[in-house]
Image 1 (tube, helix red, strand yellow):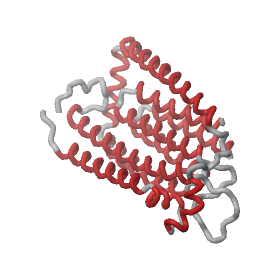
Image 2 (spheres, rainbow over the protein chains, first blue to last red):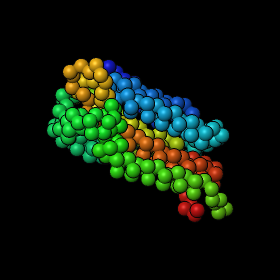
Image 3 (tube, rainbow over the protein chains, first blue to last red):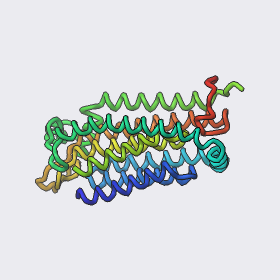
Image 4 (tube, rainbow over the protein chains, first blue to last red):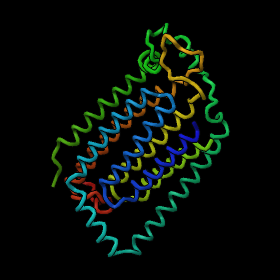
Length: 185
Length: 112
């Protein structure tokens, strides 16, 4: 189980690295899709079918929207990038070194906390349900839902779902507002 | 244990993408990679070896059930991630209409 997941994760890491270094925006998006759909297979292996369904829908919708955003602009951007690299090479390099340095410092910062957290977690596969044991025991009787995840989302933690719906509504209003108003010239 | 470390590496790849790339689309891609790694990490914590999916059926075998709580939380997080990503996309469309580029070095003026 752990081996299968590790192979899938290495595949996803390769897709992510290619997505960040691709010269073409369209191929970068498609390789970002590798990460998303690899995540779907990981969810299926981890016994989370609801998450897999939601993730596959969300990933498809996101991919379509992103392709629609970049479709008529890809080639133009590529040409500009090549011109820029030829013109001011050492100027870009100084900024690039600074950026990589920032990444290394932040990575060390995160590594410190990751190290602390990983010491307190149980090893993979030996999780003990503490809070959810009440949900697992009584959910079918209390909520009448055979799916425990649905029971948690819509009954035990319904206010959380209400907040999620509020965020979705706010996002829709925000997108409409941003796309409607004409910008100042 | 190695799965957690690979998940962390995926997180760092997304962080590298956000901080070093200059294209807005690449930055959004890095952000979504970071999101994916966090979702996977949370679901990995709740996994139980030989557990079954948290759906109650009639002929249920007497095995442990995978923790449903992280799955419910990640389900919320995925939908919120879709909302934030669509906001970012709308802002990217507006920026492209105004400046005719995705390069953040050329987007210098902050006027609406």
